Image 1: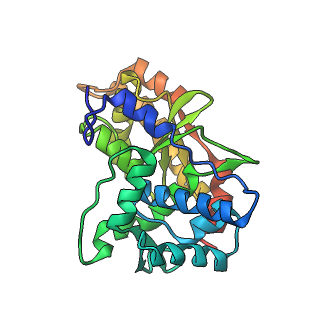
Image 2 (image 1 turned 90 degrees about the vertical axis):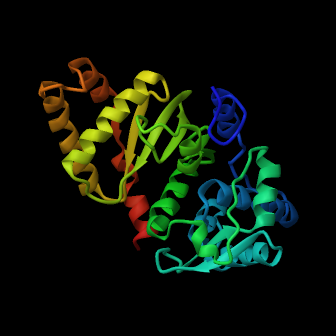
Length: 274
């Protein structure tokens, strides 16, 4: 079976994306640090469409001023373009240029789709900028000096691989303790009907073996609590409905598979909603 944007088999493409080196380590000198940051920033922008100073600041553990110098240097090199937007906590994001996309493709050995436009703001969805930046941060989270996840696939990469409507478009696929986990970043309250549809799709994807569990992450404890409440209600109700598409066995499986990671709420809130 072939991926949607490559002639590689899906399993090979998934392993390739999961194994792209994404961990930033402190370098012995400024020249090595500059080279490592240049490479990783371009790859991150390719995998999430945008990047901002707040992401650079926390990944490289540098000041806001130095993060701006770093990003503006990549603009000067013709790899990134600055796009002002009030949707970002920094009031700006950066997107790839054609040259930046070509460089990212060379680094990752994966095709990087690029839509040429005179308006760089059309290269990304302005309404999802905050969500995309928070997701980027979540995928790059560390546990001490090591990465929290042992590889990830971003939302846009997952959508290109799995284009079926029966499969829930998850925010990211991460490798955690040698298992594949779906990552869902929730920033807003959703109606119960939406959660019902999502639960059915999660069940379908888990039974297909796409991932083992679903981790829900948010900057708000209230949103996570709301999601958990809806899920508990629906896992009781859905198997009892007429022409039920979720069985009692499916509901039991989902109760074990759905995990609500509230430990990151304070961290995300402090960084993105200071």
